Image (cartoon, rainbow, N blue to C red; front, side, top):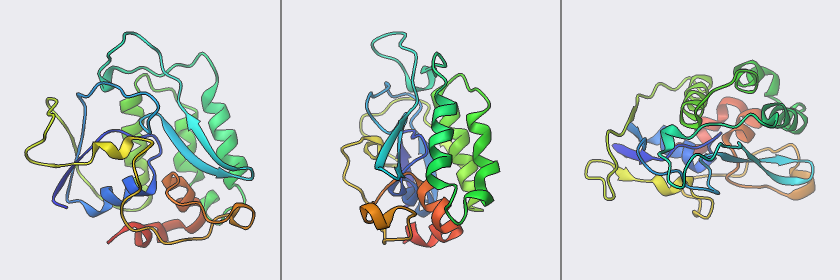
Length: 201
């Protein structure tokens, strides 16, 4: 794909990562209204008890808020909770110790805005994968984009997974079977840089 338009996502799933890696130009939607109950502030990982959603709590300031103005709430220590869950789920995975130091700071340092936090996380993931991609932001909201393939729906929780995904090793697959299209963290911690081959066309 030459140019794709994506909404922001927290620890994006493999469908989202596949689009990132297979597209020449990435444009992030910076002018949409925040959509509740979406992957914009939610990620899914695999625990010993099955699939689990990690959700970043947000401050509510008005009914309609532009995504870049959406602030993270720290009323609860969600960073500690998320990192503890990630650690307990993946500490025995083959590559956790290789990438732990790249991801842990996102659960120690506070970011004011969700969009900024997600963007820095995506950049960190691309750095881990040794992939160089230029990411630009929209300058206005377009209902029907003229110059990019509109894949903003990939951040919706009811969107059907797209792109290639072959089964790969998962720590808890022996208990629950293979679980597809989890956060890319699942593949990174379990199969490392082979994640690139998993999601590229």
